[in-house]
Image (tube, rainbow, N blue to C red; front, side):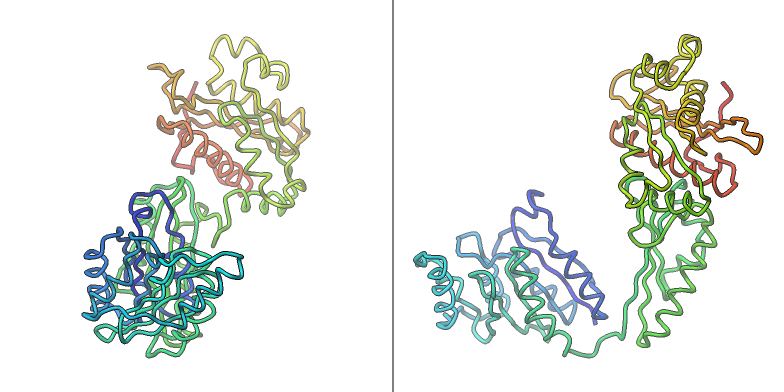
Length: 431
């Protein structure tokens, strides 16, 4: 079975309010073994809503509509549903009583205009609202079952969980199970990930494999749909293993695990400690690392050395390096990492220096230039450093975020015994 979700409201179309209802409903429908064919957001326009309902009812057997059930003139979903069905609206006396009682419990008198919320298309059924004034509506159109709920998330969720989801569970036929998994990677572009996955991305196969990008992270999304739950799990597990084998060390986690979660787990596994020295990222790397509960077992701390004076005083960066190469340079990044390593007594340290912008760039050192260095000690306790140059664009927030993530992935590669220049977002440059 497939579903269509319609979200009604000018505030959604104009971007003034984020539509969280569709995400919630889609996720819960998947749990019930029902996929979502599409989401559509429609403005408060009676004709447009009616057309969207009619189209949806001819596209899928299950339609969920949220929003437009309030008492004001721009709440037009009930009228639009009646138009799509070709019927008039009728008043439900029990709903009027329920709405009036809710106002009385709050010590108020029900405005007369709230009676419109008790109207519903002839031949449809009312769905009680346990925490608001607007009842929902249960209708059938073109053999599709339609459920209409208020747009207020708390009211929608309550109506869904108490009434609608149990009713849908009785519908049939439906797929036995839909399983999903997300594999997160960092360090490769989306097209390169797709090339590595190869035939796994054939849209005719089951499980289906796709990719999305957010915050520089390329996520591989796997969806298995089978009648037999055991088969779905086997096929899902097998596809996930194949995808991870194709992408190798660029994979840092599954599900909602962040790069910092993977880094801390690996540091703990290797019984290693980390220190950080940051300039352009302003402590973002340290913040992301310490977002992980229990990170104190592996992260010793760090320095935010924005000025040259702080780099010299706090990290021991030689002044001659700053004068000769400038703060944003490979030698200074190496010196920052080495200074953090020595002062913290850590096993590994990172130094980050760059130009986040929007100002401060030159032809030689443009905005987005970032140097990241990793320092460590070998068996003889000698300090070694390695560094890479990154060109991360001209948007300040993106430069800082990508720099912090690149630093974490560099440390992961080092801990796994891999060359840091496997991180293809950056490059080694002699300086």
